[in-house]
Amino acid sequence: MPTFLNTMVTGTTVLLVAGSLWMAVWAWQRFRVSVFLWWLASRVSAFVALLLAGVPDQERLNAKVGTFAKEQHLDLDPVEMYVSMLTLTNLIPILTTTCLAVIAIGELSHVGPRIAPGYEPGRVLRCVHRLRIIWGVLAVLFSVALHLASRAY
Image (spheres, one colour):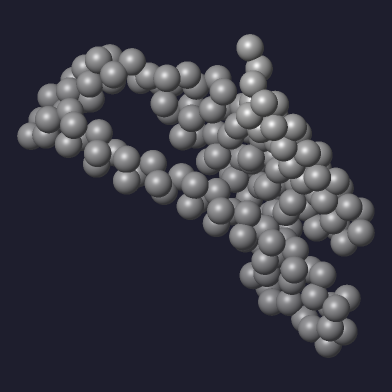
């Protein structure tokens, strides 16, 4: 049974996605800046992966971590292994943000000559701008990777 809070969260989420989509389309049509499209794609794909991931069974997770520790001849109990793996999962959102920042930097350097007529972007920035689709695909993959890894237990 939907409550008022569920309705408000759903409505706010729909408005946020619609507003983000409008901002992404406007930025692309006006300035040929696609970083907002990639940001929206990474957020939506991470949200869908989170919905599909489900909640892991604690006993099964402990058994898998214990088996991994024994196979690798590690002297850790499952709790220590799990806590050490948590720090690795913090790396994935950082990689997503880094890919999106690289796209933004490349696109700003591409728009730079229109803003400041004497600006000439460096060779590395031109290469980064040309490879923005690859950076965007990596950002989407990194944002989904954490949620898909939680299903593979």
